[in-house]
Length: 101
Image (cartoon, rainbow, N blue to C red; front, side, top):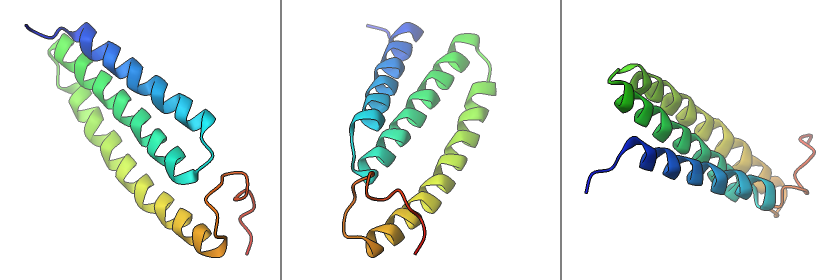
């Protein structure tokens, strides 16, 4: 059984939908952060599928840039979340709406 590009696009859409629902529904900032990363990975999967479908390496190059930006976002985002968690003992997104000390 071979997988066509449609299978990858369907999987990408499902992963993106799960990540989007997780961002909208969950209140824990760490879970929201993981859902955003899941959405980025879904986009990466669709870019790779498009690159494979069109037989071009442009999509794969774009995926490398997205992964680099996602890695930088993880570093900065987790540092901010850990600093906020040290100030306030909760990880509820509604409680972390003010960034002043």
